[in-house]
Image 1 (cartoon, helix red, strand yellow):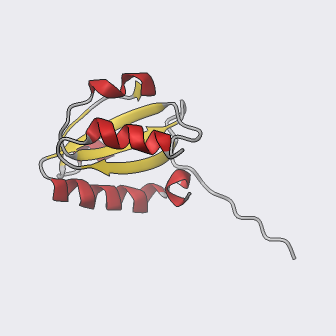
Image 2 (spheres, one colour):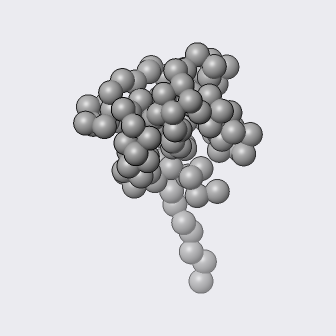
Image 3 (tube, helix red, strand yellow):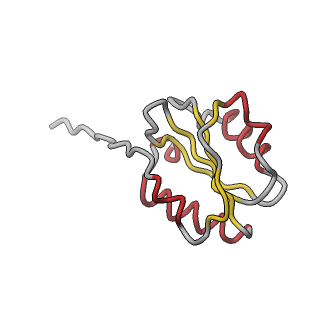
Length: 112
C-alpha cells in the first residue's frame, strides 16, 4: 500500500493582526528589505506571493533581523518570497504568539 501525505498550506488571515499579543505589525516585504524591521520582540512570517504561510519564527528583543536572516540561511524560506512581522510587547508574548500561529497554520517549513 502507498500512502500520500498532503500538506494544506493556509493563506494568511488578517484577523491575526488583532490578536491581543500584537502591539504593531508590518506589511509584507521582500526578503531584501529585512534590515528595515525594528529590533523589537515579535513573530515573523514567511509566505509566498499568494500569501500562503511557509514558515513562522520568533525573535526576542534586539534580534529580529538576526533571526530572520538566520532562518533564511537554514533554508526555512523555501517557497517564500515575502516576510511580515507581528511585534509584541514582551519576549514571552512572542513565544506564545509563535506557538499559537504555528498550531493554526502548520507551515511546511517549520517541519524541516
